[in-house]
Image (cartoon, rainbow, N blue to C red; front, side, top):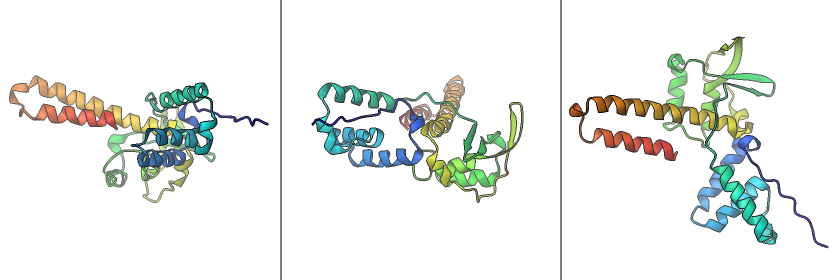
Length: 208
């Protein structure tokens, strides 16, 4: 008797937690030079299909699912979510980055790069803290102590995490664009290598 294989394909990151994403990313890095292994990894982590079951999927279905997964992974349209509720507690994104507590700034800076890795949940725990007051669009969050719990961010979906990451990527792009524009206006005073260095920096941000 032929057994039916039910495959659920995600179409957005709301079903993918940070913990699950990090496991996926680790395996993708391990098998990045093997196309078939990368595909099997995507099927396993995102659809729950064991590697040994892939060959039992008909070609048309396999190709359709594969294309859906790659399209899904290519998404880059994420908005910053200023409020996130976890276990009944509402957390708010740092309302004024320019006046963020020095201790919070130092603790973020020690990670060197803002990227989604095993330290990302700690960064989210710094940037998002419990909301203590809300009046319309204005709000306040708890003062930073340096002892905030962060493990619960591992269970938050990737739309929230990517929204925060892309907020900083877009902010960096805007700052880079403004800097290049300012330097172009004074191009006669510019060191010949400055512009190319800044442009390469922009490319690195895009690749991240």
